[in-house]
Amino acid sequence: MKRYLLLFLILSSCAITNSGPDLIVNKNFEHKGIQRIAVLMFDTTWGESLEPKFSLSKLIAVPNAGSILANITALQMSKWGRYAVLDRRDLEKQLLSLNLREEEILRDPDYEKLGRSLGVDALVVGDIEKFGVSYKKLFGKFASAIHSQVSFRVNCIDVITNETVWSMAVKGSSGELNERAFASVLVAKALENLAKEID
Image (tube, rainbow, N blue to C red):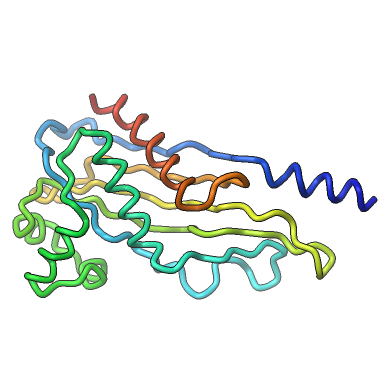
């Protein structure tokens, strides 16, 4: 019995599951009008506990997930080349000169005013559901293999009309890659799919 349990744990740690991006593109929007964008820190209002109290599965959330996923998304969007992406460090400096913090913008967004101040056509914002590693407790002492869990939604908002230009949900789990590397892979794949829809 112990051999089968050990084999199950080893095999389950090697899986990568990706449900694929859930993509929504505003077909009524003139996408060529969006040239320059800024990626804001993603919202991490997931609360104290992500899992039910009595669940066998536990998630260890990554601190600073909002900044990390915004950086990953900005980097992948820069590689994509569709938009001129305002560097995240430059964004932070510009916000500091405007006496703004990204955390404040998340609570009370004024996309038009912020877009004009930053000189961008659109802002990319996100909401994180899960970003960390999960494990399952078995028999009180043992834990199954650790899996990276990534689940978040990204929205591109036009700063003039306040319309959603496109939106994508990115989610999956991996036993092979850490959560940062896995998020990078998922975002790159989601942007590939997005390119097919808007180009």
